[in-house]
Amino acid sequence: MSVGEEIRAEQATPQQSLATSAARNLATTTKSVPQMQEISSRWLLRTLPWVDVQGGTYRVNRRLSYSVGDGRVTFVKTGDRVQVIPAELGELPALRDFEEQDVLTELASRCEQREFEAGETLASFGSRTDAVFLLAHGRVEKIGTGPYGDDSVLGVLADGAYFGEQALTDPEAIWEYTARAATHCTVLVLPGDQVAQVAERAEPLAAHLRQLRSLPQQRTNKYGEAPIDLSAGHVGEAVLPGTYVDYEASPREYELSVAQTVLRIHSRVADLYNQPMNQTEHQLRLTVEALKERQEHELINNREFGLLNNCEYDQRLQPHAGVPGPDDMDELLSRRRGSKLFLAHPRAIAAFGRECSRRGIYPESVEIAGNRLPAWRGVPIYPCNKIPVTEARTSSILCMRTGEEDQGVIGLRQSGIPDEIEPSLSVRFMGISEQAIISYLVTTYYSAAVLVPDALGVLENVEIGRWQ
Image (cartoon, rainbow, N blue to C red; front, top):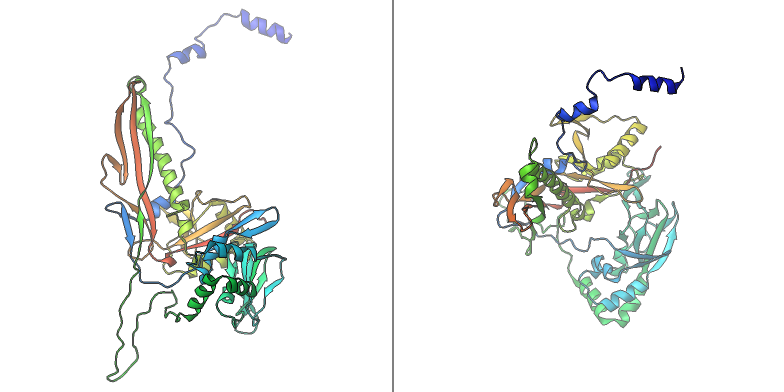
């Protein structure tokens, strides 16, 4: 029998029971609650200690510090030509607070662009420091002499860094290390004699440099803070030094930021389509989830209070081999006491795992709130997909000490606001429009503060796309 004959035979057979397509009209469909792909683990919000702020502002009082001019320099690239933004020269310690834009523009125009290949030497130990190097792109290793006479990497510099700034203030300064290119580098070089020529014609610059050279060297501890004079180990009736603790005259204040939206629901939807699931409840639930995702993103990336932008430059490290390795994580840990957590993009965690496997190292894991998380030296590594990944497939790994009592990183919020459903998160009824649309104002207030600089460190420019 052919296929056509079989179909005709089936059609000729009378139906003996109710078809499933018709039966479904009388059945109750089992439904899930609305799902949302944007929801993440949000470990930062869960692990950060939150401090209630009254008046919407938190002031961080610190001991007086004299450290200045430790920022990074920004460049403009046109084709293969790189130029430094004149105002960015103010990041150099010798030019901090110098505001003559015409003079800064002249200095910027005298910078010479040079290219160095991996392994080339930019400056040699013991030679005279006669130029300032502005690193536009690439990695430079600072090479010193180890305790047994061998070469030792003292540090790694990357995009935006500078070195040799002593050439502007001390003509007799010498290089205390050798600067060697670890990758192809694009560098702008500002010779000291060019600065001297500009100073001869620009009296404001000459006066600024003369004043800087005449200032006495500030006495500080290794953290750049004003010292507290003490005496120890003395015997008899020695004269004890007098001292006091000086504070910053203008301490930083963190104002609470806000994330808001207006949720609109038609009254017909709220009235007629509210079973078996409450439409208003689930609309609010998903809106609150989106606000919390934005809140964590802002805590990481906000230009004013985001952790990536508020890490001091002396707490920023560069990976020695590009990929995040155990040595880099150890260096990151060594920069602070009592580190409580690492925070990294999942792809950066995977890159670290690959590097550990390549070396035959298998980090332990820890259990946090019923979840098994990777750890290094007992410090858990939390995933956070809000940490950006660049087009060059690089990312950052954060390490922090948390808590107000430990002078760490804290989250800021204000509890007790009107119509609060969670601390510092409110849902406020705004009324019903003439189109019968119900409106709710959903608001959350938040910020973050780094109480002392060494509470937060960042391993920058880690390569996450290199496969061994």
